[in-house]
Amino acid sequence: MAMYVLLCLALAIRGVFSFFPTQESGKFGDYSHQSITERALYESAAVFIRTYIITGNKYASRSPINVTEDFFRGDRSYEAVFGTVVETMVWGNNNAQRMYAGVPMRTMNAEMIFAGNLLLQSLRDQIVVLSLSPTPDWNNVRKLIGEYLFTAQMFYSNTNWVETFGNATCQELGIRGRSLMPTAPPDVAACAGCTYSHPQIDKHSCENNILVNGQYLTSGYLSTQGIPKPAGNFSIGLGKCSHGGKDDAFSAVNAIGGINKETSDSSLSPHFFLHHTAGEAAVSATVQFFVGEVTGLLDQLGPRLFGELIGLPVACKDCLKPGLSLAYVIDTSLSMSIDFEQIKSKVTETIQSSLLENKTMPSDFILSTFSDPVSLNTIRNTTDGYEMISWIRDLKQEGGGDCPEYSFNGLLAALRIIRPGSCLFYYSDADPKDPELEHEVLQVAAQKQIHIAFLIKGTCNTGIPFLARLENATKATCLKQTLDKARNIRSAEDRMIHQAWSKLHSFQKAPDSGNHKSTVVLVGMGVVFLVSLMAAVVIHTHRTPGKRPPATEHSQVS
Image (cartoon, rainbow, N blue to C red; front, top):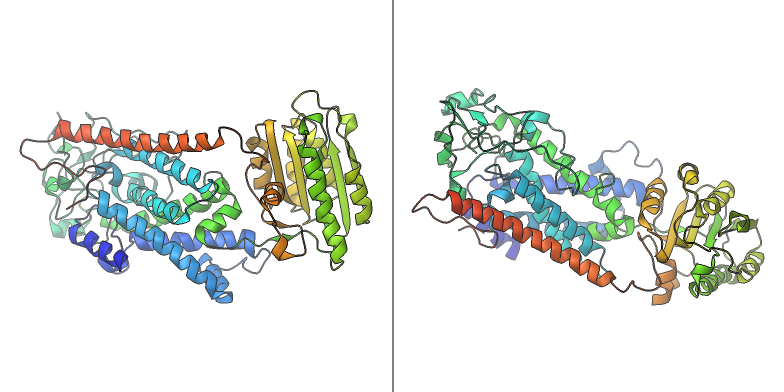
């Protein structure tokens, strides 16, 4: 009921600032924030299902929507959870529209594209940091995602990106470290006037009114957002672009017309003929936000956390099935200290429990150890679980006078003899000393579709660079090492040792890890405040006497 009331408020206060919030509030068949977000989530869920839940050829030729719907037919409980996830993100999107529709950087209007991009970078950072926290508040994260998507989707309806690049997505938008195409400088005319009468607009009279396509990004000024349209020293008929539509008084100010693509209604959107293209671009960009390579949340969080985020289970790989190998690659250098004995104890317990149950066993066991020098590395395999246990118990620490170890050598030795589709558990505290073997390691691991879980600890590693590449090349997901599902993770200590899929595992928190996360969140909040302050200064500078103050970041549109 609360969501319905908020939606009604959004519709009551709204001019045309963006895609309509829901299908019901716009023209039938038009793209809305709701339809864009829902479709993107279904498509993203399909990618996740195909890759991590039901692999193989079952869904190879099915459309994304059919994949997701078919999966839910198998278990309606997942459908209910996923539906709640979608509803929460759509609520976050529509709430952002209710709160910030009058704030130009939130809607990418008034050429505040740079500020809008900074905001997106900050929101994205917050989403990742909150998701990686020890106990994520997923409801809050989902609402924040909706807020992010509101502005990201606006980029495609309100700027000239679509006029320049069609339905291609902007790979730089919201990504820290990537440079967005520059915005048109204040003294550059971005639009030429067009015949702005309804019959002529229907005939695409404003189709070619943008002057800076391919050179600069630009967006329209909207009279209800509080930033006056610059008069400038432009030639007759030229000027900054207007947002356009029957509610935009700036559509009659040079340059006459407008460029928004928010609807397919020519009375609201001068570039109505590009509405479908803008909607498709927004859908693709939203899908990339969730499951795009490298920058998508799936790659940033890993499948276990991403599955929790969107309410879908990650199918645990049963590492003890017949026909598979169970491989352990263990760092035996002296730097492993007391953790070395913990590892030996937990690995022994895992194998011992499977032997005692005597119901199912892997076909063979592999033990690969590595240290420095490389001559200390060993590789052994056996079909006898008790022999494997004796090897583990007899392991001794030696070598490793400096931080890097010959870990790729140890990994490669195990990968060469491991059976396809098997599980490999990797324990170390150091970076590789043999980086020249990385390509071969990635290639063999990917070809054999090996499921890899990592445990990295200590200060002797940078951890993420080579592990991220190895994770992306393999099928590292949730790995089950015990026959008793109820005892899959029996204690906090077990969770430290055998936790499934995390970018970085450790026995003990680094002293500053909590502070680091807090710092990132605070920095993110600081950026939002700074960007808001920039917007306020611009608005104050350009405000004409007697004009109503615009909505700020924390005010509601009324």
